[in-house]
Length: 357
Image: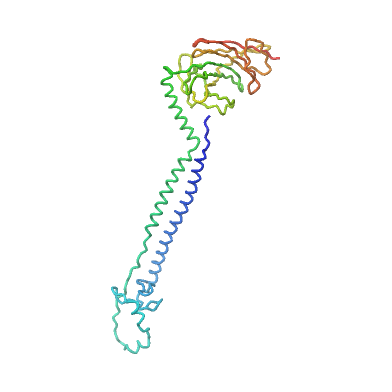
């Protein structure tokens, strides 16, 4: 059966991608915060200029100057009197300090003054660094790429099963193209066994290829037409059903007369098994026991064919021609009748009778 475990390489990739995603996310958030902080600072400066009527900057110290002011409130430097001339800093520093008393003595009442138009100097807008823009765009692209990679690696088990199922359908479709003509390997041994499981009678067909057959090998097995098959796969030597590889569903089969013929390719082991539900119980009861009727038609010539049945653990089987196959997982006892060189297409039947002490 298929395994959905994660390889160490896949786990390592997820760890690396997870770390990179955290770093990329932190980098992207910090870049956005820096950009937002610069915009906020510019907005606050512009708002302050509008409220205070600031239209120019001091040529000496660079501080903002109120509209109409002749001297900088920060350093005392005289503000430019024309919009196209800037006084050198050494000239401004050499000018005597302003004295209101001297100004009143030299200016008589009624003197008119021509006040120059205020100089309006629009503050230069700070440009967002190009390198920061490049880093942000690169971070976004890397983040999107990493998310895509993680999404591909994080495919769920159900999706993988769907993919395996589709591949299985295609594989079985290819099988049917050539097994209907040639290339089918016949079983060296066949067993048809009936048993009761949880109140339902089921049939199990097992087939063994010769050890000389190289794998992969194509096989066919026939069941009654319309039979409900619930398991079809290869049987390994471990004895653990969970470790037996099951063929991809839906199974490849065709109907010929009274039989549904199932086709598959053996790739792991030389033994197959198919299980299906019987339409009716094969048991006829008597006062002291019961009789199980078994019949099967092999699809190909079978060097060895066993017709078998499982009886209760307390049953006593007196037919000496029967072969004891062993006890089942629930204590039931399996007996078989061996038929040598069973020809294809010929119905084979037997009965296994037992008594209950």
